[in-house]
Length: 349
Image 1: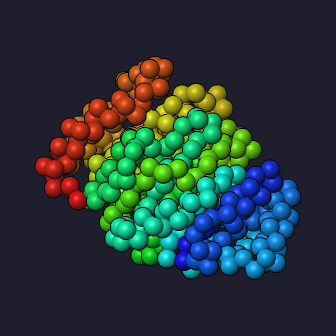
Image 2 (image 1 turned 180 degrees about the vertical axis):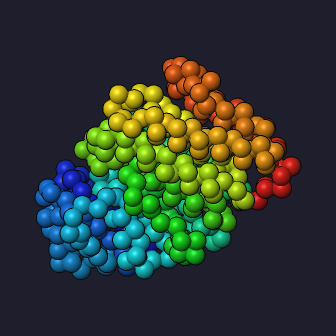
């Protein structure tokens, strides 16, 4: 069974299309469990959800529906965690309620699992409406046994949707969303997930339609309270620093560098809106110094040179439009030599 988890908040404009795309799936509907988490949405989203569920039940559709209702708005992380608690499927699949699935989405992903039975994670390609492009520029299926590549710029995916995830991997490693932050929670989830799996499959087929919802919780939250946003970045980076060890050290370092760069950029652009800016800036720089120290201790000179770009003497580089536009390509200049060093460290798993 595949457990689909959909948090619902302020999505009345999109929820019908999202649920209809699940009903339109070409895979056997008896293996679909659809868990809808009502995060105390103030609009008419749940009326539309209930209508859709009732319509499917009237037609004797074999999809199993579960509806979880929150008494107050608890955020997307708690909603997803509650969905995970209720899930019974071998795999879980997260969907944002303002997006939708292409008809062969679940069938394509599940068939990949049947072909590569050791896979714990199967990721489909997604069409990004705002960018008018696909997530992955690949022409054939990629089977990864070295999980460092899941953090690598050409494949790294910081979102949680459009992924078939083996549920017992999450249970065994106690991987959940951090409910006390409302920014980059997907990053942290993936940071912990990628190092826990044994084999991953990346597919070129388009399976998911992503749209940027300007009314969504994350976008509204990010700029509504800049202090909380920066504190969220710091909270997650502190976990990154603590867990920067063992399997996927290289990949985790790239995730850490990416988030450090975003946090520094956010800090520099929102200083006037952050009330406790000096304290938070001090915490942020202390964490980055801690990551640099780990690279020195672990004899990782390439990663040290990469991360030092996020420190004060070099921040002017980040302000350059060229750097911001080609961030992934620039960071990839460090990837190949760092991978060679990774062989030296015996982490080529």
